[in-house]
Length: 332
Length: 182
Image (cartoon, rainbow over all chains, first blue to last red; front, side, top):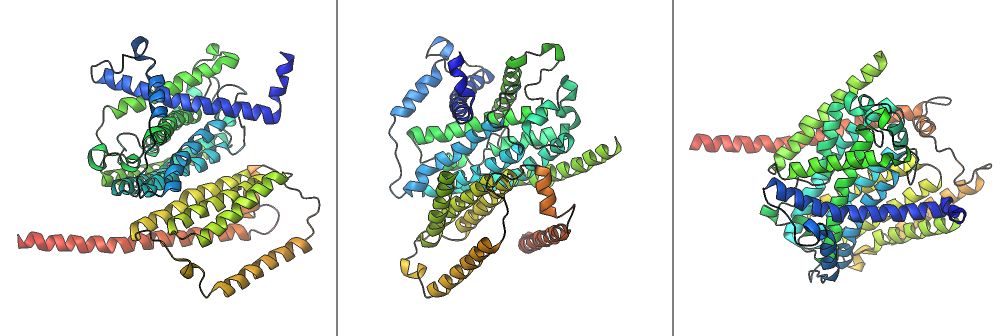
């Protein structure tokens, strides 16, 4: 294996890891779509997709083949560059943030010292993609969906960022690797214990940022028939879907990294060394399942309820908890 | 390094020209986000990843989005003709651009930069924060400016709430009248 050592050197290591992460993101999206349909099926007492392959497990493959062979239609009056650029502008930020998440000890593509800031900054670009999609389609429903989406994403960015600050204060670092290392030695050391209100706020904001039920007003099938993605078809639509589902996986991964110990095992004797990514995977999958569980259990909020929850409940709550955290750090 | 610099500079110039020359105001706003991206790239090259992240967060994620939001709420995006873009202020604009460019070039040429090179600075967030706020050795004027800007923003937010609330009371009184009428 000597000849493979060059892969550990800088440009090659980064390119290889980047390819792996991109592969992971796209596949995660495809598999989550199937997971979503399966979970929906079992929650509604039916089987979900069960025709393609054993127990319907090859459904993602069939979906992808269908999407790739479908024609890409764009409206005649669409602003073509913006229309086609929007899915890319939605997908790239989601894929880029995966680069800073530590999967196992030492297994992180880019260990930058401002990883949390990078996550916040890059996810905020996602709103641009939503607006581009809504404007580029030149359709009233699309524009309405985009306006709702942008308003929602800007509003919930505030509690999202504020809820991270408690963890940053406790760790004293903006690096996700440091955050995970600080949570070692058993599940009682995870930040979810000390920062439980912040975890709840982060979780709800993550639901809103990924535009999932109960915050799916930008999509709103029953009122604006799909929002900013009405006019998309084929692989452009597929890319938007991939961005949404990968974003859901990403938010789960980030909340696991920040609050649930990342790759740290729940008890110390369960340490798997380099294979600790199994723990990261299990925890992330559990959070993703709760996202889907909520989707098939709750109704959609109204716009004013959405704004009330964001600005009148979650922002004050995070501010109060920040002060409490600071005071506790000063005393202990 | 040179290739990356060339790419970023080209991206920035093309985006900036796009902002000015684009005939559609939404395209202008999107070109502006491209220009902001290039600035963030320069910050990364200068070993200031924190500043680059703030650039993305504030300018691309907030300013551009709010501008687009405002455009969509207030007006139908319309196509401008080139004669309104290249209007009579072209010479004044050129003079201002040349003046600012000349001033920056003068500083760049006359200042002694020592052994500073791109990518050689410290990536420490703590040091960056201290420089930004001006604490530690040196004057604390930047910390003062931060406080002033914070107060300014606070006043602006309250003013915005006051302005938008006035409509609310109008609506409420109107509905009161209707209830009385019924």
